[in-house]
Each structure stands twice: as C-alpha cells, then as structure tokens.
Length: 623
Image (cartoon, helix red, strand yellow):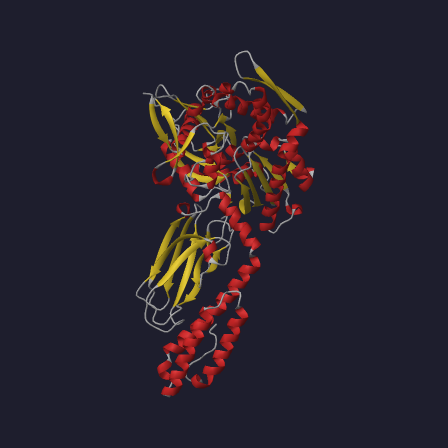
C-alpha cells in the first residue's frame, strides 16, 4: 500500500494599491513582501478601463491605453477621483467641465456620479464602483495566476483623506470584483509599515509625503516599538501628477492652436489624448533631463515640435510646490510638532521623483531625513501586503504590528443653544471611546431629550456637519437641571460611530450607529472646515462663553418658575413671576457678542428676586 500526502494551497490575502494613475498588487510570503507582475510582466498596471463600443469586451491597463487613443470617449481613467462622490459635488463638476476628460460624466440614480458610454453597440451608464471593480478584477486575476490559487481576500489602500462615503464605495467595488476586504488601510500608513518593518526597535516620527496621480496626502505617524499611530493628516485633492500633466497641456495649447488655426477639424478628442500622453512622458523625462522635446503628430505625416526645459517646468509647478509645503506646515501644527521633530521623511507616489519637489522637502527637513531608499511606486502595495499577512494569521513575525488610524474631524453633539460639545477630538487615534459626558434637562417637565450629532471644528453647530440625531422619550418629570444624562461616543477602526445616552435615574437609554460615509464631508469641505475654525477661533470662544452663561441663567429662571408655589406671599409670587418673564424676554433678544449685557441683566434680575426667594429657591449657579 502507498500513502500520499496532498498539500492544499490555501488562498492568500493580497495587498492592493488602487491608485489614480497606476495600481499594484503584492503578497507577503516567505517572511517578505513581493510585488506581483501583471500579464505583461509589469509591476504597475495603468488604472484605466476601455469599453469596446462594438462588442462586449472590457480591457484594463496598458492595452486599454492603446485602444483609448482611437476611442477616447470609451476610455475611462482617473476613476478614483470620482468614486464615492455625488454628481453635484464641486469637485466632480470641476472635473466634468475640464477638457482633460473626454468621456461623458452624467448624473445617475439618487444624484450619484456615472459615466455614459457605448458598450457592445448599446448606450450604458457605469458607476465609478463598477469601473473600479474592473481594475480590481485585473489585480485579482494577476495575483491568482501568479500564486496558482484563487485569491478572494485583500487589504486595499485608500488616501488618508478619503471620506467614509469614498471608503464605502471602494468596498463596494471590491465586492463586485469578488474580493472580501479585510481592511482599508490608508496609503501613508501602508508606506510607513513597509519602510519601518526592519526598524521596529527604534522609536520614530515619520512624515509620509504621498504625492500620487490624483491627490497629495501628508501624514505624521508615530512608530513606537511595533505600534503605528497616526498623529495628524492633511491633504489636497487638486494636487497630483495629473494636475502637473494638465499644466503642461495648458502651456502647450496656445502653440498648438496657433499652428493648427487653419485646421480646426484636426483638433479633436484623439489629438487631446495624444497631447496628454506626451505631456505625461515629458513630465517624467524632465525628472532626469535638463530639457526635452517631442513631435506631436496631428496626421500621418505632419507634426508639431514641442519642447520644454526643466527650469520652465519648475516655474510652471512652483505654486503647487509651495501649496504642498503649506500642507506640511499645517500637518506639523496639528500634531504640535516642528520639522526638527521628524526623524524620517518617506516619499510615496511617482510624482515625488520630480526634482523641484525633493528640493523643497530638503530645504524644509534637511537632506539627511529624506528617505529615497524606497520605490515610491511600490511602497503602498508592499505595506498593504504586510497588513494582509497579519489578517492571514500564518506569519508569527507579523503578529507584532499594531496600526492606529486617526479621524480627520472632531465629533460631538449639540448640548444647548447650538453649542457644539466635542467628545472625540480631531486626529484622535482609532478606535476611540469618549469618557461619559453628563448633561441636564434645560426646561421644566421636559419629557424627551434630542441628541443631534455633528462633525466639525466650530463651536456653533450651524457651521458643522450634521451626522444624525436620536431621542430619549418618556423622561421622569422634574425641574430644569434635575434630570441628567450620560452620553458616550465610540468610533471604531472602520469609521463607524456609535453614540449611546442614558438617563441616570431610570436608566432609560437609546443609541445611534452612524456610518459616517452617509453624511461625511468630502476632502475640500474638510479642508475648509478646519481653515474656517482657525480663522474664527476668537469668535467661537465668544460664542461658547455666551452660550454656557446663557444656559446657566436660563436654567435658574426655569427653576424659579418651577418652584413658585413655595413662595408663601401671593404678591411676592406675582412679582417674581413677572421679573422672570421680563428677564427671559431681555436675554432672548441678546446676540452672542453681548455677554456683558447678559451678565448685567442676570445681576439686576438676581438683585430683584433674591430677597423674595431667600431660603425657598436657590437663584445661584449649579455646578
């Protein structure tokens, strides 16, 4: 008899960098990460999809780029810039109105963004999730072919500034591709894990400068032993390699139009696509050459010679380079750090190869801190594969990794008078649970309490973003301030916020689970929210002081009204009730800038009613 041992090849979780211009996939095995090549043997796959207008054929990557030259309206690229965004999003409208995108961007069901195209002789609409899923399918197929087993699980990277709506859409795309998402990891954290994997014995403060095709992300990550904690994040959704390409296109357009002014029929979407591709190549070549030129063919035999020097290119992008430096300064300020606090500057994304970018970073941090020993195109995929290996539970050496992300905006609730009480601060590491916060009823015999939940940095809720609200009903009757509640926020690793509130005497409680993606602000609005909070800091402090004082004196007024029957003299009782009514009308008419008038009104009111309520009703503040 013979016995046979069959070794079953278990599916391996993979790490995917779903990029704006290029995507990549990697695997952790044999105690190291390795890139997985595509069908052409390349480690990077262009993030583009071509829908054949004549037959039901969908192509991805390099072959899609080639076919896109002849049918640009069916060639979809930069789809990551649209995923998870509504059609009326300012960002989507800006891209829609740009000449850069020859495909048709339209409004779909429920106000979502969709792409209209011809596929297999039919007019169809495709969501960004569907288009992204084709890229992810390609990554999955490449990995399955390379590993000799069907891949079903992945860790996928997303920009640090992706809203939860964009994260949710990315997960939906993965599901359509037949992939279970083990975790969405932010691109800077993935790059930091890859960089620090052999340096975990030292404490470091890393600044990850991720300048990809579509966005700039800057993150500060504290590496302490085996723990990766995000300290702060900043970003710009209009600053990436594609934007540099567009600057070059706009630079050459006047020359091209002048040369072809009598040949307007030649200037079409196909020619524009050729210009874009040549400008993309030119940008890369100017990272190594002092100048370069190319021939732009507008017919089989005719061309225009276009040239540019590295100095001219630097002048074109200088404003953008300065914008990137300002984002770094904001990120450092939020983490309460200086350039001297940073031990390593990690460069991620192909655009970090641009010499002018590196010069700026060197001038800010010094050449000894700029780490150029990572491949900026591969770092994110390799880091994501390490995180995938952690979930695979096969590699003991990976059990040491602990990753803590951060929330980009503060979370809190409206306590009274539109005042925002922050329970989870901006840039808090996730998961995060707030301490129990106690609040009291504001009116006499209040039967219910409403808890509106906001995100934002302003003290006045009307300037913040409402995430949801819930109510506790059937409260026990009592005077203002007598019934109290405890409220707790818990934000998990995936951006799911659970808010619970309990009335302390009866233990009546309620809770609300908020998937932030259904409400959360986009990148530009987050940036504006933070900027506005800084601009209006003094105004917000004034609003907060006024509202807190107003609520305290209002509670005193309510308490007096509730206990009027305790005043024996009918005359005194009528006087006190009348003074309460007049006081209430006076303070209700005040603006938050009039805190001195509020304090004076309370002082006058107290002087009038104290002799009549002495020993019966307390007219002083309750702590």
